Image 1: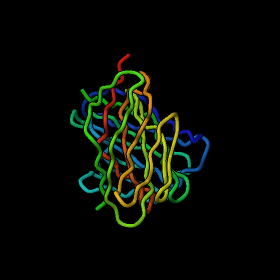
Image 2: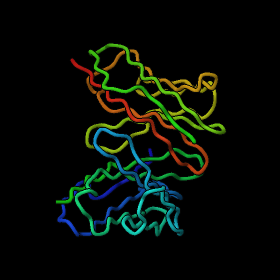
Image 3: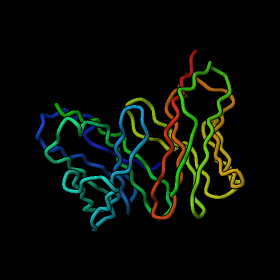
Image 4: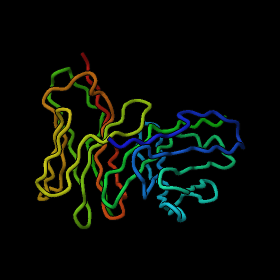
Length: 115
Length: 111
């Protein structure tokens, strides 16, 4: 089946550091990738949708300058949390979809802890 | 807007018991419906899906039927195992591949 690899799985950084998370579709071309944030014992909150070669579409309330998304190829999207602070600590999950109306396939998530 | 409502957990069961997790939705148009499962510390895995009314999705002993008349997509399994302990998310997908998730239901199966 379709495989999405997310890296790193866990990162612990000092406040003020910028952190990059990678999301790769390993065996299919992802025309669209999604980034979610999940707080403990809660559902997934969509942060942004990115299409290859174009700017990401951010959900209301998500800071574009804080969460930089790049989708440079059909197999790779990156999320950079800039100048991270403790309140940015969370579980970030990416997903990828091939063609229109195809199911999303999820990465294993990245647990970000900012000290 | 689109929304998904699923029963709150946690649901605690004994092994071999029957499991039902209710899920209802509101959406414009004709969404596809999904159940995802999340094991501790991991991302989401697609469990099953249905793309039109009366379709039944099934996988690993789990089933769910797309009921347009009741706007429901309840998840069922006849005999659960300890390994089924996880959080289950109901979701709908509309145009643009965007998913709308329910709040998740935590299931704990005891030996």
